[in-house]
Image 1 (cartoon, helix red, strand yellow):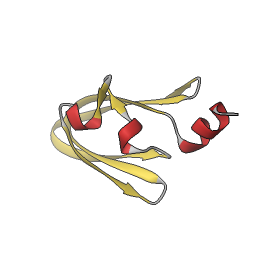
Image 2: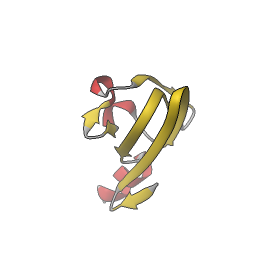
Image 3: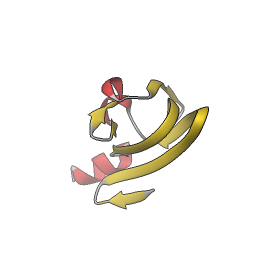
Length: 79
């Protein structure tokens, strides 16, 4: 993962014939992009749910690049 200004970028590779749940701390589904697309349009993304302070994204095998601003970073950017 890396931080680019106010955005967090997380790259993951899920091996063939497997599934994974990726936790994105402080993320909201409507503000997360995967390879530049909203989660609802991203290939391989099977669903997302908020659990506590983390967004859990279910994915199949493949390579993913998630980008988002956390709530804390958005509040700071608005100051």
